[in-house]
Amino acid sequence: MLRIAEKYMLRALDLARKGEGRTAPNPPVGAVIVRDGEVVGEGFHPKAGEPHAEVFALRQAGDSARGADLYVTLEPCSHQGKTGPCAEAVIAAGIARVFVGVQDPNPQVAGRGIERLRAAGVDVVCGVLKDDCRRLIAPFTRQILSGLPYTIYKTAMTLDGKTATATGDSRWISGESSRLEVHRLRDRVEAIMVGVDTLLQDDPLLNTRLPDGGRDPLRVVVDSHLRTPVDAQMLQQKSAAGTLIATTAAADSSQIDALAAAGAEVLVLPDADGRVALPELWRELGTRHVQTLLLEGGATLAGEALRQGLVDQVMVFVAPKLIAGDSLYGIFRGPGCEMLADAIRLEDVRLDTFDQDIRMCAEVVRCLPD
Image (cartoon, rainbow, N blue to C red):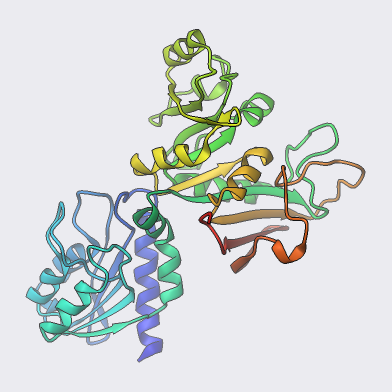
């Protein structure tokens, strides 16, 4: 039974991923209804305010839902939000058995949906592909429990650990296939962030470039002294996404006005030692329903975010190239640990390949400061 359950839960996961980056403040969820070995209904949650995955699957199944099995990546909700409680809809449809990937971390739910189903006589099996289902909703979990976005630090380096040559040349370390995957990732996150040094050096667009276009994330620049030029490429493009520049009270008011006139939102935040206080910025993004933040570029910014417990996942593309020499460019800058016993540890390590590049993704064990 477990092998069959995993088969249909894999399908539910595939469906759920269609909503990644578009469901905030809700999590992405997928659902599959099976009767007599045949899929009779499928659905996923497309965005906040729309019906949940179970409702779409039940609508498709119709009368065939009675006596069927439901496979759902996340525990059906039991509370009234913008839509009705899914647990009640499942009960009313006559579903006989529910396979749940993972319990909802939302304190408003937290097992109550499962309890309601069982109280109504529905057989509930929990924990089917729980690690995959938990990973799927990691951004939602991070935000619902801390108010902060789940942050992925993405970078590329050569096999000898360099992110650029001694002259600063970094285009391109990773291959075309890896770069395409990064644009797929941008399409699935709510915001992308760089430091102002990266902006000044690379003048990036910070958009999504996929064959079918894709969706641009909110562009965020950390610029403590507001050095962002008004003619930066990211401000000249046509995009439905906005640009947010985080700065401090040290910023020149005329530059604030000029950047605002160029289409950017300038956010003045408290400073820490003359730099933008990163926890304040992360909290602000959380209030804007940014569930997943892609931190790209800026080893200094990345190092500080890591030290402050703001990085949740490290994603490194390793290219089969050697820069050698005395290049000091690495993926993190700033103070590090002096003893290996104090090193920040990673878990849930995943490896895959894109042509000749190797991508490693791993979760930071300690993502919140003491």
